[in-house]
Length: 280
Image (cartoon, rainbow, N blue to C red; front, side):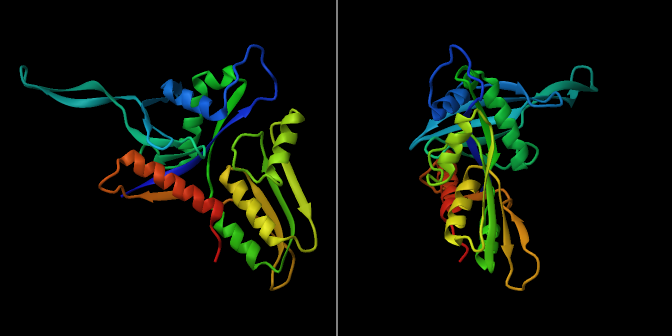
């Protein structure tokens, strides 16, 4: 058994249009960026790479990502009977699978490579954009850890009343956003040449079911939300935030499936749980 980070991969149109750009769908751009096997400096002189790109059955793309580093390796020269240190290359890496249906990615959590979801998300974002494929379509790829909304939803449900709710949106991309509220807000952000917008509603007793549904959708695309709630115990309203711990899913491949198939299935299961889970 091992664990994967669950990341949302988006491909958003840039505010300023470029001349002679190609017209590709977001999933196509992300796919081609992976297949280009990019190399990039992700900061502090650390060079990272994507490789081992293969298609997985049912809409998955497997890959490996990791870094190269020179290390001193102790050696023994049998001819001179001397001990010495020689420079060698290490290349620690972790496997991942991109789900083309949901635009989410599961990356194996591995010490020294991909232990923290935020760090590995930032590295994957830099690598994918470094290919130049997104820029050629006047787009930018963003990668965000998906947070678990269950704590936020529990506080909403247990509150005496929700009196304020707000959430952020960026430009249109994932197809499974809340079409009642998120989709128009994303389209407004794009039409107004913006990059980020905030939607806020206030009332004496907001509908908790609507708030819960939107909160799940907001969490699934890696955006942020907050609410002001009145507690049953009374007192001043409490402000709560949709943060949550990044989703981590356990993976146990079955005898008849590959590791990559198991990662794809686990990523979809975790994503579905974020979108549909309840606090009961």
